[in-house]
Amino acid sequence: MILHLCGDDKFFNNIREIYERNFPNENEYIVLKGKKHNKYVFDQNIRYIGYLQILLLQYRKYIEKSDIVISHGLDNSRLLILLYAKVRRKIVIWRGFGDDYYKLYLRHIELYDSMTKEIIDKISKRRITLQRIINYNKVCLYIKRLLVNRFDYFYPVIPTEYKLIRNWYPQFRLKYINLGFKRSIDFLINTNISDKKYILLGNSAAYENNHMDIFEIIKRLDLGNFKIFMPISYPSNKEYEKYKARLKDISKEKKSNIEYLENFMPIDEYSKILEGCISAIMGHHRQQAAGNIYMLLFHGARIFLYEDNPLYHYLKDNLIGINTIEELKSDPVLIKTELKPSEKNINRQFVIDIYNGYKNDFELLNELNNRTKNEKNSYIH
Image 1 (tube, rainbow, N blue to C red):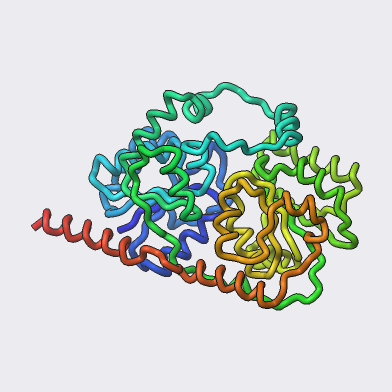
Image 2: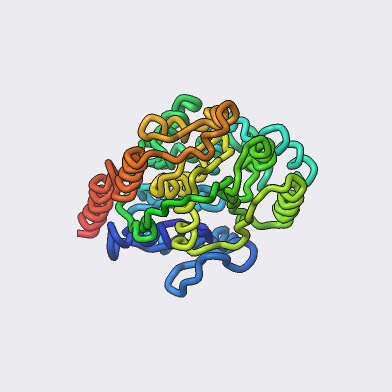
């Protein structure tokens, strides 16, 4: 049995679809609740636990039934559960989301450009909380890294990040596993829109998009009648609501043709917007927005990333039409230059291969699951 530790986020349905498709009747799910009501996951058949239940060890019976525990993302509360799983000699796999392992191992990467950093300083309240101490104190980080080293396997968003972590933290002991299993691509139906009129800016309201600095680049571009779509549906808290309001004020001042996507959209509706995009600018200095970028590539968009973003180098080695934001500054016409049909086909096939589970470790996970079952049965007999 595979036990999945998940957050109350928009990724849950995708996670469940993938594992039910590839390992039917072999999965149990625990969703970790926040302080307030759920936002994304509403299912009576799912186990929900909060912080108090974690402290009271009310997850033990689910650990005992499982053979493998996969944590989709990693935070402090999940760390406690995973350490208990190791005490009970379960196989523990950390499926990284990005933010989790960048904070833990790749903190040297500068995420914010100057204008974004300035506005963060103005609106962000850096209160000293226990959570912040655990996340940022050097001693706590050292202890967390030691604890994580007790896990068995690690799967980052892109394979090159595994090497990146090993280079910066040679003590990292987890083995690499590819959990990119086959999934549905029904939402990626391509209607071959011939007249692309949109540009996508960023993937969320997160500061890592460096919206303020990208605005400065955009104002120098001749976009003609192109409309800019800007997703800002998440994160959502008081601090980010101030940030979103500031974004809107600045775009009005610059008279930008921007439409903000403020509400969470069903994946098929969002895919239709991306299909109409001729290009997209992602202002991240770390790997982020990979899901958005794969969808855009499937639909034939040109992608602009910062050159120091690990995702840029991974995509550049495999695809066509991946440009740097630095190139956009020197050659502004690129923003409106559509890829050739042959180039779009190469990129689309790359995305299809990813969604079809190209080079995944299905057999390894299946073997691990069966091995632990056999060991358990032999112990019983």
